[in-house]
Image (cartoon, rainbow, N blue to C red; front, side):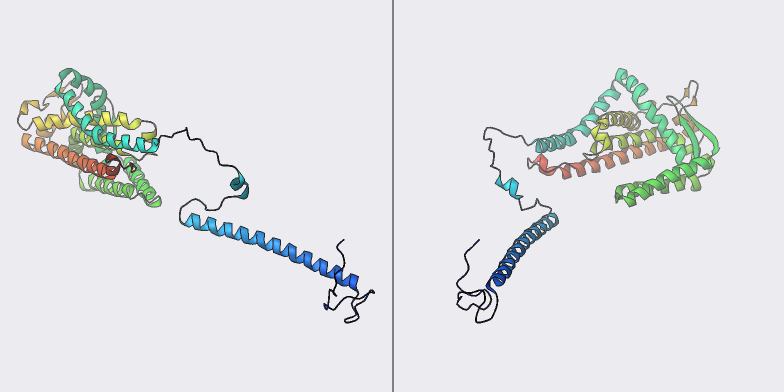
Length: 348
């Protein structure tokens, strides 16, 4: 126990012998006990306030860090007290920057290389026959089927022929419109404006194909949609190479297969009709065993198109696809320009 003070705990007068202060009449022991209790309470209050102030400072620091998208500036006391470990012999490779640079280089060379190899393949009779059997004919038949679906007809594509219903199918009209409407809705919901734009354009195409074309005109369109669809779908498959890093097609390397199939399908159709401008004999007129008239023969003999019109329209489809691919290619290069310069900026 601490010795008694030399003055009265209450009034501060000089302390005298005896239990009471002659100046204020307080009992010394009781006054000292109350003073000790008061001092202890003040110390506890000060400690509690210090803890609260520290917690408030940390909360404010965390809030400012979150608002600035930065790491918190405070360090917990236990972490701060730990000795810093230094490993001077360890070096770390900036793998993210290297991966971004590699992806940027791929975006420069993959699309032109795929188109060039596809052009070489269609110029080689052996490779052309193989690619047509295994790669391009399914896309050709899918072009017929997609054209029929957008005109309101049911269609089932196979390897060499596409079966199309004789009449429009209300179920197919509702199904296609529902899928495209879902695409537009999801684009709006997730703020994916490209989804909304594509869905809206395709809904307009379906409206024209279903409402503006009579059945005979619709059959003419999905006859034309074989090679035309092959070029359009081929170009669409090639665009999948530029999907974002977290996309399923990129994570599982499916974009590589799609760009190969797309380049082969597009070049198979475009090279033929581009060459047909000066060599009409390249056009596949005639009968196909088990199928009937070829698409070109049906367009000329059944629907009254002249040869120049057939060539011109197929070439226009192919050139339009090339223009769209070129715009996408240049846009992709623009987004990775910093990585190509060695700055390490991210490839989108």
